[in-house]
Length: 414
Image (cartoon, rainbow, N blue to C red; front, side, top):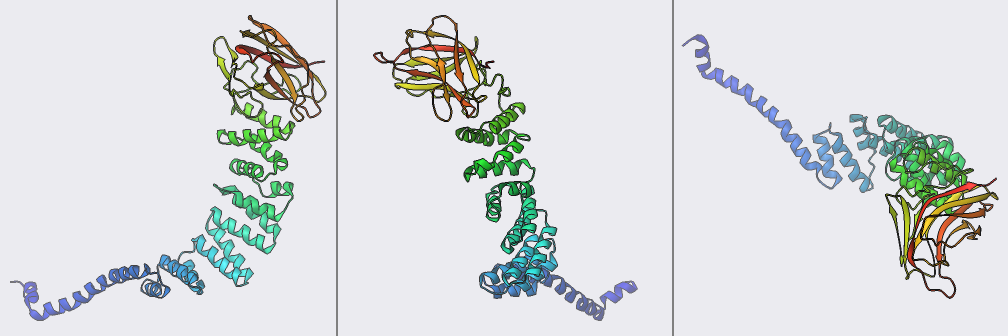
């Protein structure tokens, strides 16, 4: 046995080693046990128990936030816990926001503002910017309100209507809101157009829709087509044409842009699928009426089985025209089993008053392809509803048969 082995075999030496190792092992085991017990206490639902967890784990910001939640729910002052949490995790914007709102509740507005600004510095997300916008709204500070609203809309997603509502609570000036609050961001513009339509503020939506149309994607197609329909119902033509043409130019709808002063009709050869918006053809088959397209050769057909209403307009399109100008509608057609006095013809109505503007429009009846014309003078509002109409003539029965149509066009007359 060598000297080292003899020393280890010596009982006093072994006692000294054990006396040093055992406390060290106990110390190593203590902290995991302590933290585990703190975690257990932090799951409690009363602030007193969670406060004990904070003592056991003073460096855990999450436990401090849990304590502040319980203190706040119990009507206690949660500020010390929140300040400790902010010191441990200064990048937590939610903590700074809560501290700012707490200071505002106490009337300490400089502290409230500084803490809310700290939240915005800590995070580039929507929530702290929205909190600042609300703070300045409550303080009546418009100069600081508008920049933070704009910041919110630059990054906000989902339901942005509360932001727009706060803008209109601050000011009824649509131009001011659009200039100072609404960023040139497609998602924000689209949401704002929908908001204005929902709120019945269609008259203020034109510049927003026009800007959106210049950067629209397929995600905005439905919104802008609905906007076009609302505008046409209100008789607003120029802006609707501009938005429609932008959608055409960006190929979000399958039509060529309209030329209002020359050939303002859309899809006169019926090449695209039937639409129900804007300046596209609108079909309303209804009882006793069927409508379809023939691909080759290309034409549209309308069939009547005798059960249709006394009067119906199965096919129609809104057409932007020059007020008081004269127009000529040209078309080709042939019919099957329709009498000479068929009651089927093209009509041009004033989109606002519903007055039939047609100077002369023959009944459609020809077994062979034939050209036809319709003349009308545009109304003051500059919007016409061109429609294929069918009515039962006095002393006659409802027609049974079909008509085929192609090459429909509108020309501005000298």
